[in-house]
Length: 473
Image 1 (cartoon, rainbow, N blue to C red):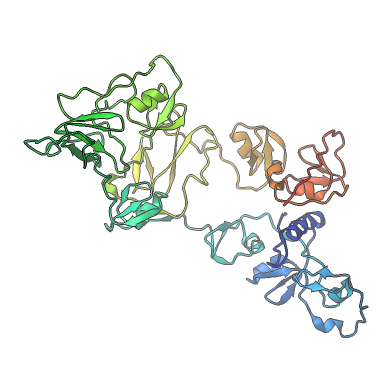
Image 2: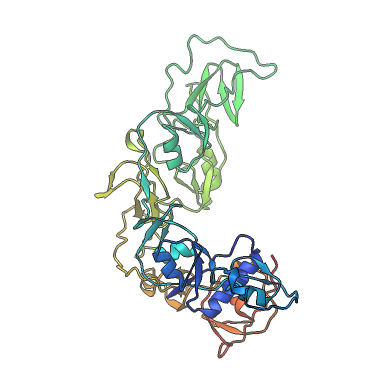
């Protein structure tokens, strides 16, 4: 059996809610719940009837106080229904217990999809999260976008075929319609610089094989400079939608150093950067290529995306024909490659595509190793059993099989301790020691519960570390 957190009424403060969870963990017994205005002997029975949880504990019945003579003492208590009673007697005579109790759910994987679009392990766990079951089975994870061309401009400055395509790419829509071109850097010549007369439009016969979406701007100034690039009279420059200079003559294999040409014109001297080609401090450029150092990346007119070498290129970009599908969730968010934990995950937002002989459907994931080869991620079949263990790499795995498959040894059973979970919890300074599965003795139940680690009552047999975290809200 696994236990889920009790659902506190909205009027109960965060501090009381935390204390409720701690109490639920300590008791770990089946308790009555109030659901749909009716008292059930357990939460599971209420969930089976399709009832939504009101609160943990028996439903309030004021008629029960008719034959009880309670004192007028004022010693307020909070009932499981979120109401404050003047004293314990006045709460108990209604059948209401003090504070919410625990919820017990079976460790059975019978997935259900809730109305909020989330998948839960079973109906009991959905109800424990106060969610309503919409259908049996896992929630659908993919939605295909239509081919309707109703362009929108994304917040990244790129034009998408429609709103759905932008959302599928994880980009917010900045405006309706195609993105506008960047401002013309040569609209006005610098002070003291005269204009030139050109026999033809310099951009009329210009092309940019490196980026077919780049915009061409002609200079009718005798002398002009844009972002460090010198552009002569009747010359031209290609810019992307963000206004960055595009290197249209860059070699296909990228990298390298020395001088590069970023503007058109046969008489123009190339813009150069003095980079140390012998310095190897690799960076990954926004073009997906690895450069020896940041200077060489800048010389190639590329900004640094990350430090270190680039991973394999995305095999799905660009989508053939520009057809993009919309996925309700990132396919890589829940994907795992147990046998090859260092592989890179790529989501397919295109129509079905075959990569190295492997057909990948829309909204599915594909794993590639550092060399860009498809990895076989199903070499370690593990049962879908939830019996969490903490690995020696301080990562929580659903069971020991998955941990072993990922190349990690099991440090202890249960979830890994996460002290960060206590950052917003106010724990009392009580001394009631409990032993965490991580071998650490904690001062009390609250201080161990907020870490998420499993535990047992009493101090650990041979422990020297007894943290006394003083945490504030």
